Length: 385
Image (cartoon, rainbow, N blue to C red; front, side, top):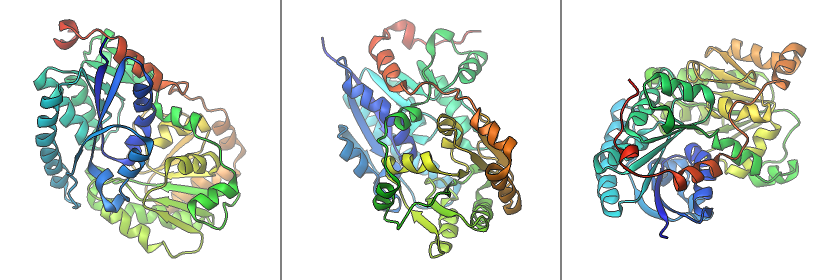
């Protein structure tokens, strides 16, 4: 029996690290074959050519689509998507795989889902039904679900949301969050090993990891918000590990602020932190500061305290390890100090429950892609009302 070919796509480091356990499970499944398209920030020197990590992982790359436009203008992302779609259409038309695997909520999710719709190819949408209010990604995610045939959610609330939106319940499967797979399986490093791998003198007992991205509805304010975060972080007088943002409009403002602090004592800046090292940083961090989705989706598994700055992620499903504050340095400092010093806050964090699965999402997704019937019932999509 021939294998089912699954064409996936990846465009940015954070999304790739989340997808990697799923991609690995597809490669390992005897009835599936992976075809991977690499695009976006992976091919950018600004983001340290993270395609190198994909190559090192050994995944079969069938195409590289350069579409990232260096600009903080909102139109740049849309123009990049248009050029991506043109190349992707030709590729999918030529390959005609049995499945398209669409991740989450970015432009590559929309372009690949459009290919599935117009070319009548079964499309699975991973991380469907979640919310990121105030960002274009939120609307993209829900639009992609409408274009997809199999909906894979990271938690139960997302599954229920899709049913309320009119999606047929038999299409929806709560498989958990694959980011937990990577945390569960990442090798443990000692403090000395981690310091050496990151190129720093030592990993102190207390330190802060900073990851902050722009919000598409607040592009012009991205620099000010990052300045509040960095000034607050420095006021804490703790060792800082700061990662560059994603490639969304507004990211150049954030990078400029980060670079203003690069020379400060105790501040370690990285364009990209390799996954093994990053997971180990999270395991020992005092707090994760910024607005990355990993603070809501993966940090509960580690019981890692999170201070989410601003409106990005503010309406997203989360556990009791996450605290939401305005982009104000004094508010940020107060919250971090409460995490360190306040007994009740510490108790809230230590008892938080993880709602995002058991760390075996990859196997569940691969099993569904191998076993789901690809027929007219699946492909002729309808609403439940």
